[in-house]
Image 1 (spheres, one colour):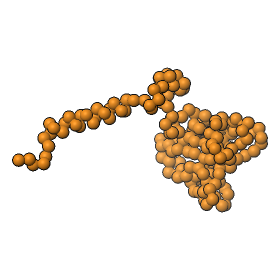
Image 2 (image 1 turned 90 degrees about the vertical axis):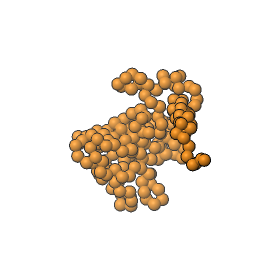
Image 3 (image 1 turned 90 degrees about the horizontal axis):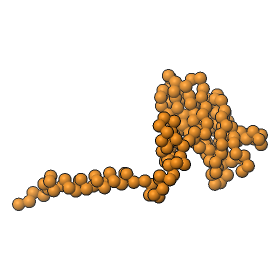
Image 4 (image 1 turned 30 degrees about the horizontal axis):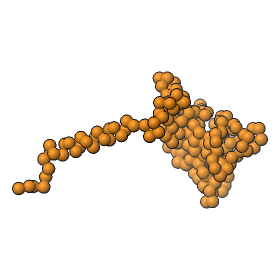
Length: 192
């Protein structure tokens, strides 16, 4: 008479087979078969000399284009400044609190009265020194900035992603200065 329950020994081979498939699939590359050739194209990490991991869309894993620091331990690291279809530039990176007290980026907001985004990096600008032009963060039709929001309550040793979109400078402009209110500026190269 069967009770509907399987004997543990009957289930074990199936469980082991699934675990083996999962383990083997995690060992594979990204499917292009060219990981070894591409590894030499990636920059070496500072600690080991081994190739840095490929960018998986995470700004913290990308190469550093520039870094801004203030005296309170706040570090803004820019990892990407890419021209996009549609005539805009997307700047990405991280904000890290290396200081000893909580950080609120309220001073980084735009002073415009019609700006709706709070705790944002809406006051950031790109400056084309060659063309003598300043580009402000883009806004959507509701007046919200196309940029990071929620940059309040950043605890010590915490970091958060940062992004902002700007109108693109002319195609012959290869470098711009990225500025955030109350912070020094940094020159970054545009890609794309």
